[in-house]
Each structure stands twice: as C-alpha cells, then as structure tokens.
Length: 112
Image (cartoon, rainbow, N blue to C red; front, side):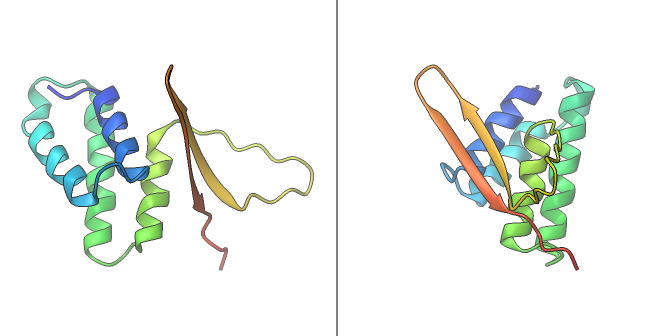
C-alpha cells in the first residue's frame, strides 16, 4: 500500500533535490505496483498524474523546468491570489517540520 502522504514526501524530496529523478521514479514504480488493490483513490490519482507528467517528460513534451513546475503543481492544493496589477514570477513550494523549513521556487512559464 502507498499513501498520499508518502507520495508527497518523496515528491518533495525530488523537488528539493534530496533525491534524483531516477531515484524518485524507481521508488514510485516499486511502491505503486498493484496499488489499485489497497491504496485510496487520492493516492491513485496523484500517482496517475505523476506518471502522466513523467511520460510527457520522457517524450520531450516537457523540459526539465517544465517537469518540475508540473510536479510542484501536484504537490499541494494551490490557491491563486491576485493583488492589484501584481504578476507572479515564480511558483513557490514551502514546507516546514519541527526541525527544518525548506522552500523551493520554480520560474513560471512565459505566456506565448
């Protein structure tokens, strides 16, 4: 069984470069094998979304930065807040534990 919390923790480890993309993919494959038998729907949905992004990346439909942005968007539920004419310039993922705090930023894609 794989839980949503385990997935998000390992995803954060990749996004903060504590582990490599290969390490993250290897872990995901092993842990999500047969997850349809014993994991909840949220865990299944996030694994499916991650696998889609990884497939897009391996087919060169996403750059390294694009993959990080897409995966960061899956990490937490997000909220977009506009303050006047302010334009966001990056995506920021923050996490904190009792012993440490970590922030990871990704440049936003430029509008075409």
